[in-house]
Length: 243
Length: 218
Image (cartoon, rainbow over all chains, first blue to last red; front, side, top):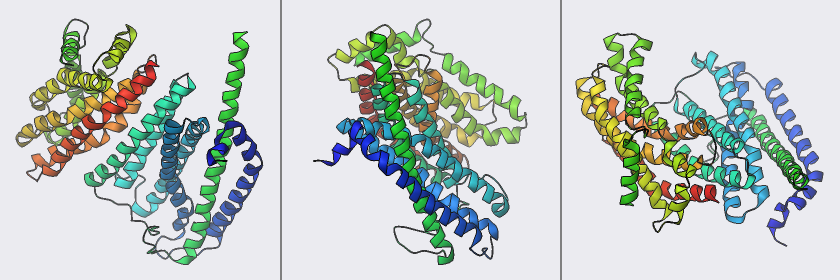
């Protein structure tokens, strides 16, 4: 029994149905704990005041905005190599979530930027690359929407996702080169572990981040199930019309 | 491949081919900008290089949907797919033909139109050089986009939505090289990056182009 068995559409529907409520439940638990703790039970920052609390939404959303694209890239590669339909549908299902996460990161950043930087928007490398990422999500979804045949759409969007990834990385370095940054560096570097944020803020942030990851997983599973059902309805329609 | 290139060039330059249309579009954009921002010489000369780059990019975009659409309609694309040359080389030939009919004329015309925008004298060489180096990448990326949307009816708008984000790095390095060059700063790094993007596009994107063409012809 291989791992790929779980990606068989029928089996996928089977195991996700009982799992899904649990993932949603745990995600809600983490999100509520992280956000309530963050918003109401942490002190204000001595310089940023209460605006610091936007970190509990902004950082996890930005983190998920990038990782959603990476997940779509992996799912696209799996589709191209192994022709697992569920994989292609998961990539399709993840794109609007990534778009929303990018939008949340941009909007919360703008709301925080007005009191702190004195401006809603600056052509800072990080801000600009997120705007470009936003455009990539839009293009990817538009291509899915434009093609009728589902397999052709899956193939073409997968290739676009791969090419887009290369250009997204390239854009990231280009905008860094292009303009100096206003956005502060990360205070939670995962690679080095050299945190510069106090535990008082970090613990609810970590809980909220886990909540965002779980919420993402739950939403992708739910949306993939919807896509599989849509595919089945389509197949039924085709069979009907052929009679 | 040479034959295909010559055929595409002939098709583009004969009546209805759209050659020159890109150039005229370029001219019109350059003429419209002063109406939009006002005729002050100082402002114009400051934004001239950026305007020229953005206008060139839009002009290149304008003729992209022609690259494969007509061949797809009359079935020539299916013949090309079965031709003895690999489909990857068809993509390269199409991109080169597109560049010869848009990118090359644009990079020659841009310094001339720079006069209208009060381009600084020191920037003329850089505008021509960066466009000469950068527009091949625009053509190759555009060819990939055109191949991606060839099966979609009225895919023109979608094509621009897909291709424009991919144009961002080329635009950034191209405009940055002109800006630095015009101010007498060291412009070698952005120029090298620009050349790198062009070389990289021509090395890798033909494979992606051929892959999506095969999917669309399936």
